[in-house]
Length: 418
Image 1 (cartoon, one colour):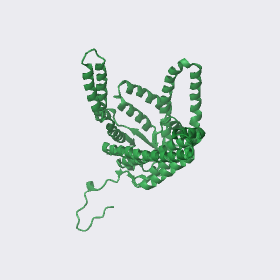
Image 2 (tube, helix red, strand yellow):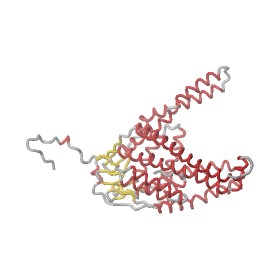
Image 3 (cartoon, helix red, strand yellow):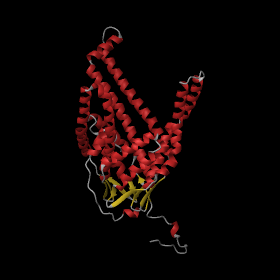
Image 4 (cartoon, helix red, strand yellow):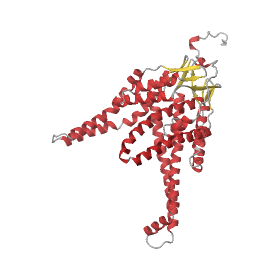
C-alpha cells in the first residue's frame, strides 16, 4: 500500500515501478568460482578426468543458485554420478557402432572411404538427438520457486527437423539459418513446461534475417572475392597474375574483420531468441550488446594465451631439469647422452610429456570455464528482463525427472552444450 506524506502530492500510478517486470540478477562471487574451477582441475588430474562430471555439476549449481528473478533463485538438482552413469550408457551404445564400422572397413577396405559418409551423416543426425535429450535432462534438474521445468516431445523428431533444415542451410549458403533456428525453437519451446505452464516461441525468422543479413554479406563478400581471384588466375589472359593478386589482396583485407563479427551475431541471436520466449503471458526482453561479447572473447584469448604459455614454460623447465639429471655423468657428446637417456627412460619421458600436456590443457580449461561459462552466463543473465512475471505464480508442479543418458550421449559425441 502506498502512503502519501502530509502535504505531498499524490503519486502518479504510471510513475511507480511495475511489480510484474523484474530484472534477472546474478550475484555469484568471482573468487568462489575460481576456487571451484582450480580445485576441479586438480581433481581431474588425479582421477584421470573422471571428476569432470562432478565439476560440471558444481559449476552448474554455482551459476544456477546465484541467478534470481524477483528475489527467487534457481536451483540445480543434478548430480555428478548421474552424468557418469549417462556417459557410460552412451559408450555402451556408441562403442559397438564404432567397432562395427571399423570391422566393415577392414573387411571391405576399398569401401572404407565411402563408408565414412553414411557414418558421418548418422553421427550428425544422432548428435541432434543427443542435444535434445541433454536439454531435457538439464531442464528437469532446474527448479524455480520449488517447481521444476520439464520437457516432452521426441528427440528423433527433433533430430529429423534439425537435419533437414541443416541441408537447406548448406544449400542456401547460410541464408536459411533464421528459419532453421525459428523452427527448432518452436518445437523445443512448445514441448517445454514450467510446472503446468506451457512454453511457446513466437519470434519471427524474417526479423532475424533482416537484422542479420548484413553480417552474412560481410562474411560472404571476402570469400566470393577470393574465389573470383582464383578463377581469374586460371584464366588465359596474360595479365592474370597481377589482376588475381590485386583482387586476392582486396579479399584478404576484407576478410580480416570477419572473425570479429561472431560476437555481434551471437548477441543478435540471443536478443532475437529471448524476445520470442513465452510461458503463458510471461515474456522476456534482452539488451545484450555485441561489444560486451567481443570484449569477453578478447579477454579469454589473451588470458588463455598467457596461462597456456606460462604452464608450458613451467613444464618445459621441469622437463629440461629432468633431462639434465638423466644425462649427467654420461660419456660422449650431449646429443649422445640425451639419446641414451631417452632410450633407457622411455616410459618416464612419455609419462612426463603426457602429464605436461594435461597440465597445460587443464590450465586453459580453468580460464575457459571462467570466461566462456561464468562470465558469459553473467553477461547474458544480467541482460534479461522478465515481463508479466506474475504469470508464473500459482503454478502446479508437473513432470518427472529425465535420465542422464541424453547428456551422456551429447558428451561422448562432443556436442554437449552447457
